[in-house]
Image (cartoon, rainbow, N blue to C red; front, side, top):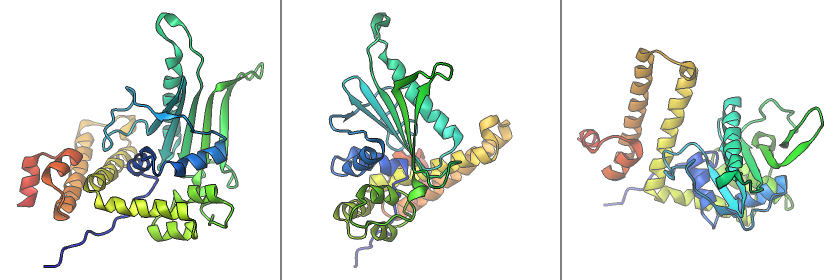
Length: 287
C-alpha cells in the first residue's frame, strides 16, 4: 500500500509559533540577527536567550512575550506582531518597562542596564508609506533630556512587500520574506539567495514535525478566539451569555482542528496536550 503523504502546510514567519521556533534555532537565528543589525544597528553577538517569570516556556500557549535576550545586565525584547494594533504595541511597551524595572537589586541598589524593544510589525500602521523603521526614546519635553537606556525600535514590514533580492539587499530581502504568504512567494523574493532559500527549506521541513504542526494550528485557534472577542466587544467586558457563546465557538474550532490532526495521524496524546481537549473527548472523535 502506498504510504499517504501529509499535505504540506505553509508556516508564516508572522506566526508566534514559527517565529519562536526559528529564532530559538541557532541554525536559523542569523536570519533575524542580520535584519536587526541592518535596520537598528544592534549586534546580537554575545546575547543569549533568557527565560524569566514573564514567559512560561510553553510554546503552544505562551502568547505574552516572544523573545527575551540577555547580555550582562542588558536586555532585548523581540516581538513579532502579526495582528498589530495600538493595544498590542502598548502591551509590548509594558513588557519593556517591566524588564527595565528589574535593574533594582536588593536594598534598592540600582545596577545600570539597557533595555530595548524590537517590534516586527505586519503593517504600515498609521505612518507614512515610505517609512520602514522608526525608533523611539524617552524624552523630557521641557528640558529635552533623553534617556538612551530605554529604546523602542519598530520595523513596518508592509513597506517591503515589493522587495526582491537584487544581489546587494540581503537584509531587506529577509525582512520582506516575513510577510510572504506561500513558499513560492518566499522563493520569488529570495531570487536565488542561498541563505534565504535555506530558511524556506527549513520552514518546509517543519511539516515533518507533528508537534510543531499541532502547536501552529493551536495558535490559529487562539487568534480566532482573540479576534472574535474583540469584534464582539469582549475586551470591554461582556455578559455571561455571550461569554459562554464565545467559549462554545472556540471549543468548536478546537474540535475542528483536532479532527484534522487526528485524520493526519497525529497521536491522541499530542493532540490533547496542544488543544486542551481530553483523551476521552478525542477518543469520541476518533470513533
